[in-house]
View (cartoon, helix red, strand yellow):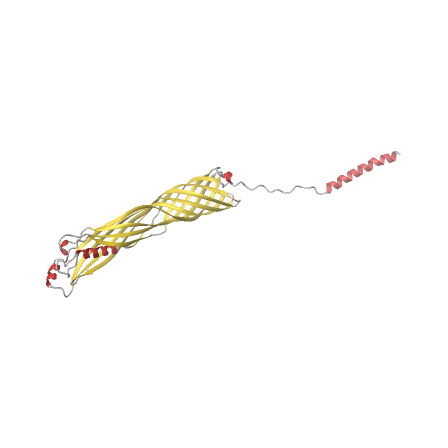
Length: 342
């Protein structure tokens, strides 16, 4: 009886020990892996900052073209019949010749420093992509000047006499941009959570100006045909050496122009709420037309066509294009405002 009682506890202890060993050999149950949450969208929200850079002119051609040559005609009749050239005709060829001498292409490049500020808003709509809008305005020292020379010839004739005007002229042009602003969209890719590479483009607007000075010297020479009668020969003899006349004038204009831009850049969030950027973009404000007027400083003597004197004048147009590339760097402070819109 004692042997049976002693055996029972021993068996129970063996069963418990064996069950524990078998349980230790079974694989343990683990919970499913949960990846860490993505980093917060640090780019979302409003920002503001400063920028500075340099503007390079992209279109160096300025076009000056004639519009009209005019004269103040007193409608004097010819001195000695229809064979004498009217003074109005002389003034007209003077003007036409001067216009031709002041027409053509002038090379003018506009370059200079720019600096100002910007504000904007970013929306980080995925871990890798950012979209936004930015507006900036800056003062500009973009300036340029150019000089060109030209020549022109015009002539007229009556029954027995000819008149030829030969001009040599020069254009002096200065132009520039006083201020420039943009409103641009931005779309970028995050190469790292703090490095944004973006493309940008949109509206450009700016204040431009131009000053144009025209100058020409015109020589007026006379000739006669073989059929010229002695009376006209006597009349013309005192002027056969011709005369020299000077035109001087120009024009100026300032205007606000609107155009477009496109470019790209890099922006690096180097510290909480702070970033630096480097970008370049092409801008084009279009053309501005500058009306010009020149007047004969030494008009034709009245003796050529009777009593009184007549004055010649010219009107032209100079077309200037305002465009270039701006390369600049900037710094931005990113506010928390607007990040709740994410």
